[in-house]
Image (tube, rainbow, N blue to C red; front, side, top):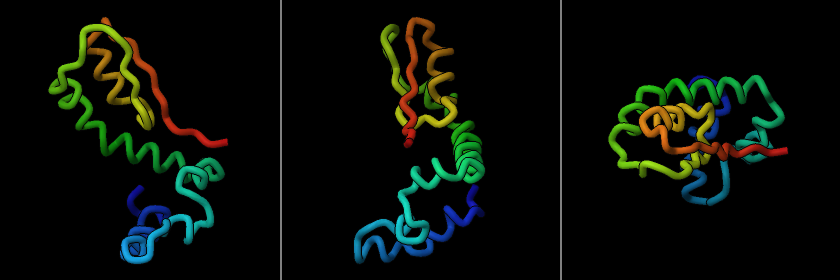
Amino acid sequence: MLTDPTMWRPAGEMHRCLTDGGSAFTEIFGTPFFDHFARDAETAAVFHDGMAAMSEPENEPIAEAYDFPPTGTVVDVGGGHGGLLVEVLRRRPGLHGSSATRRTS
């Protein structure tokens, strides 16, 4: 994921975002980040799999450390494959989960 042009090309233009405003990603690829992925399934899969791989080691310790209530609904906004949500629900069987990953049409 980190070697994909969708990551390193905008990172190389970060200074421009800070000085001039706007989005380097949109300027380079002609569309906002997630809109680009909606049009390019292969690149989107690389991104989502990469994010899941990077966050996977953190899911268990975060779910363990946070004092979630015993009942209710946990909403994982932008949770990709839902790894953190799964870990939370494993520890709190009284909770229900919902994923609100951003999707574009």
